[in-house]
Length: 279
Image (cartoon, rainbow, N blue to C red; front, side, top):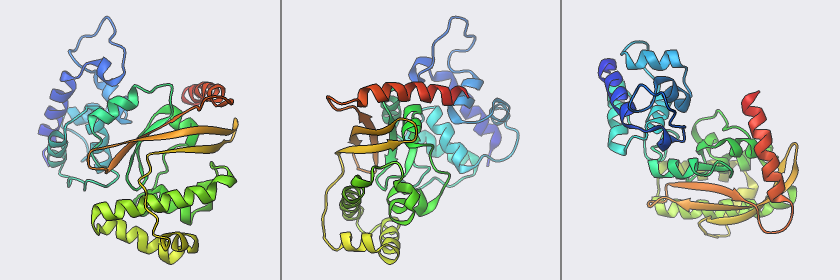
């Protein structure tokens, strides 16, 4: 661990980013060429005092989650991100973990969808990052690790995971999740993370076991969902996915189909999301 070099590297990366590149207003009285320390702290979900300590090479060793958040906030490349982990004395996370590198291009697209619920997820449906409207629509990212971070895992093991889906949708969503998981398992070629998830679900969920035996396979790229919002009621939305080149991550976003009241409810969701942020 080299916190002095860690801090110096953070400063060098902060200086090169223009506010507009991360969705911040440029302002007229900026005294630094790139982002301010407080702006990086907000983007990474850290306090300004804590981030200042990191840049100054002081304080405790940052966690893997914090290093991942800083890498995303500073739009680091895969090599730069690995370097940041090395300097922090942390192991570089596997490609499919919750601390996996989110490609800057996907983050850029996510931030260009401020009026659309959107998130970047892994191929096992674990949320890596989501925007304000996605939080308002689906709830906050669950503070869970391991297999429980996969929404597929929670779908078949935790009844509460289905609460935001209309009951008439449950059977369809179960089939789609299982077919998509079979495609992921084949693409990853016996990956231990996937095989462990499948083995656990086969042992604990009769529904999953029955669907798995059907041998259905289909990568999930688009679907229509009826979601149940606690304040707005049922919202019927189109759910679309953009897959990364290797299929390990997906940009997921929701749009209102033509007709119906979904567009109006998304507009109300935007207002509700703003109130939650300002609360």
